[in-house]
View 1: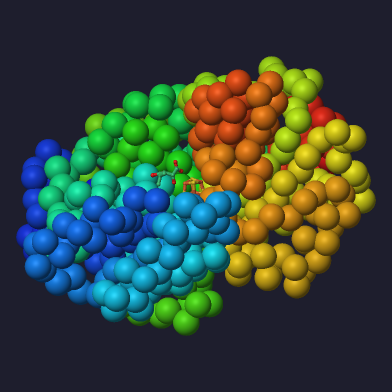
View 2: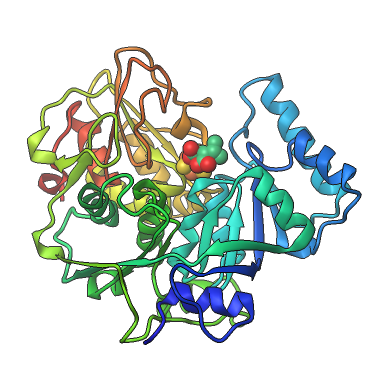
Length: 420
Ligand SMILES: CC(C)[C@H](C(=O)O)[C@@H](O)C(=O)O
Ligand code: SF4
């Protein structure tokens, strides 16, 4: 009986020949990521000191201040200062701040490589599954164990295989693919499972699109959301000067899956996740005309170069509706710079968009872009829980960047395909 990609990566990390779903094993961690909100807080630092232990391998630790940058108040500034100083005092060279959400920074800087085991103090660490890594979010206490031992235990997850074949229609993006998948599997339907995304639709996706898919694995309860790495992954890494130090894995033809789902890309139309659950998914045509007050394009889910590029194609030569706010937060400084160089930010701004700093910001209502009571926001982010982006008396529709852009033009939820 063959192995799935997850079983293979975990077997390698545990130093064993074979691993099967359900087994418990201790895996060596290749990279440990901590963000400013759940990372090296005072408790972790105090505990580490009291254990009088050193960090197992400082080169394998990455710390990123992203949820509280730019700080909205003194408290947030203090947390960023503590995170910065803790990282310096502990010899963590891989420290980043004010450059955007942690997951985009991890991928852009080559900290998420194929075949690796990566854990992070953020639930969307699963995003690196798009690079062919076994990557998952952990709590601060588990991270403390990793910092000291360099290892963590896993129950090898069963795998759900999700096959998307065919060519996506114009105006339909990876975000529609993953929302449709989550809508069908349910927000807890993949709890503690690995979801493996394969098929010609996925193979033909650029990395920016694959990252959006793996980013949302946790929104169906999954441990990881893996896409087998390939020549596109290699090219993405080579463009960043990384040509070795990783290995490709793919599932065996006779690997065992607990479930397999098949989808035809041509049948997919633009969808939204309606308030207040990510799996409350329906076709845009069923909610078209819903008035919106804010349109948001940003976050580690939907703020990448391709997201802003596709949104700019919808908005090119057009203006957003009077009374609507279109906020755009590039997923990183690198994305900002590239979009500025290519005139994309200018185009979005001329359409009436407001460009915000690369940050977690509005995605979880921490600062720039929070929404008021009674307001409705359509957003390219990954969560629409009650109060997620601000007031508990507001509503969030999750959609692709082109659907967000179309809604900004009309001031109400609209099908993006008419603008392309
Ligand atoms: C870190 C934490 C506050 C949270 C997560 O773990 O995902 C946040 O990033 C989010 O998107 O809800
Ligand atoms: S951008 Fe949003 S989803 Fe991503 S890490 Fe930040 S808060 Fe979490």
